[in-house]
Every structure is written in structure tokens, then in C-alpha cells.
Length: 201
Image 1: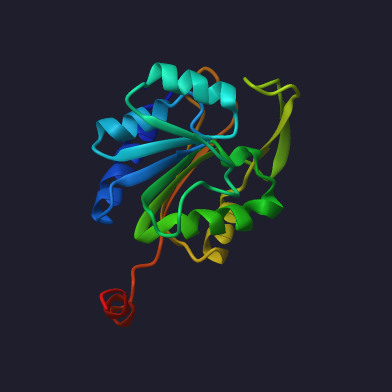
Image 2: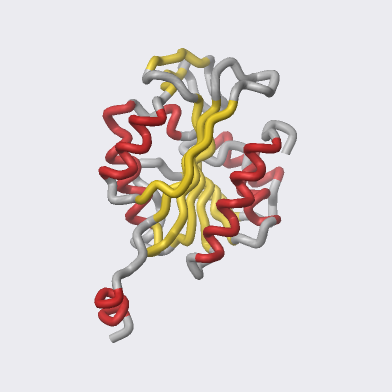
């Protein structure tokens, strides 16, 4: 993974192992782009589905990784049933979500995760400022990206009912990076004993 440094890859590996611990290896790469992270997940033993809003990106991903499955979908309306995923990765996909809409996005991610499921976020760290990006593949206009603060992200995750498991930041080290990079691993709460008995009836 040429565009991920050693810290990034170690967090992705931790996500893979935590997802396996949920008992469900189905996982999503949300905002998958060309499918690079989905392929990394598959190599680690998960069964990923790549999701992206851009048909052009999905076409690139399917050509690059013909053995993997990719679907068109949005972060705020995922193409999965309730509690059907052991894990989900948003690798720099929440950068297109305004801070005030993070609660809604994270609630949707929690919806699709099984109890004890794992969520990994990667994003450009900042104070909520906006950055204009050039036209992305499949888009006819420039896009607004947001450099989220760690406090805003972890607060919104908690508001959505997800539990913070680990956080990390690192300084820019790759050629295309101009700001600190932030990462959060969150978990969907485990079922209580009484809830577990109910699901077994």
C-alpha cells in the first residue's frame, strides 16, 4: 500500500483483527475509491464490500480488483441491513461530511454494525476548516473537504452510541499530505446478557 505509511497500515491491521473478534468477517470499505483498502482487508482475511458514490471510481475498483465486490452507495444511506457487518472502514471518506452532519453519518454506520463490531476512521486533522479540492473522478465540480477536529469526531461517535476504543494522530509524512492525520477506532456496544438471551429465543 504505497499511499499508506507504517502507522496507517498498523491501524488497518488492528481493525482487521478486531473485526474478526466480532465473529463476523463481512466488512465494508465506505468511500472505497479505487478499492485499495478493500483489497488490504481481503488480504487480511475479511470479506469486504467496497462502497462509493462515484460510478467512475467503482469501475476503476472493479477493474483493479475483479475478485472483490463493489456497490454504489452513500455514507448516510448504506446498502446494508441492520447489524450485518462485523466492521467498516471510512478511510478519508468523512472528509466530505460537514461537521454538523457527522452525528447522522455515524448513526448510519452504527446501524449496520453487529454488536461489538468495529469502525475505523482516517481523516485529515484540523479545526473544522474547509479545503476546496479539484474535480474528483466521476464528478463535474470541485468538492469541499473538511479537516475535522478529533474532539468533534469522538463526540459525534459517542452521540451515535459508539464506544471509542483508540485514537491516534501523526504528522504529515507522505508527499501528498499537508496536515496532521488522525485515526479513530470505535466499537459498537456488546450485547448485555439479557439482550443476548433475547436474540437466542
